[in-house]
Length: 189
Ligand SMILES: [Zn+2]
Image (cartoon, rainbow, N blue to C red; front, side):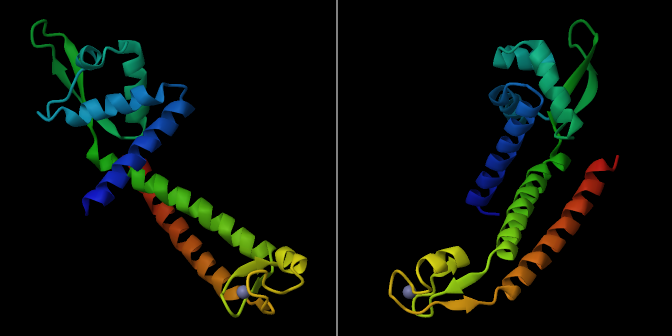
């Protein structure tokens, strides 16, 4: 995977966390901050909510709400431990890398939405194409231009878009299948 790829993936992941936070009425930037703070704690032992509060200066209540949200999506996990001095039970949080394909999952859903919109557009319109420069027009546009290309004056030709629609339907079916499998994996214990 190239650097650009992984950067795009991380960006999609953060965007995903931001959206989730908004849905849960949490501060999106703080949610990302908690996640990135856990990511950068490299000793592998995890951070307690107290540690997180010390590092980020955020309230523990808010931190716990964010952790709960991330945990519900398996983006973070915890282990039980003891406070180093008092011996009280504490929870140490760390990123759950098995859950990080969530960003990919979320992107698949976005792509699916776009493909469905595209298909609806293809299904609900008739199209005309200029044989000279390949420009494409909807029926309404072609009608408005008297079925001549406004750029080069060529006569527009009606386009058969059934192959485009077929291609879109196949991609939608494949993606839906993939998303269904991902959802089953995400629900699995
Ligand atoms: Zn033209």
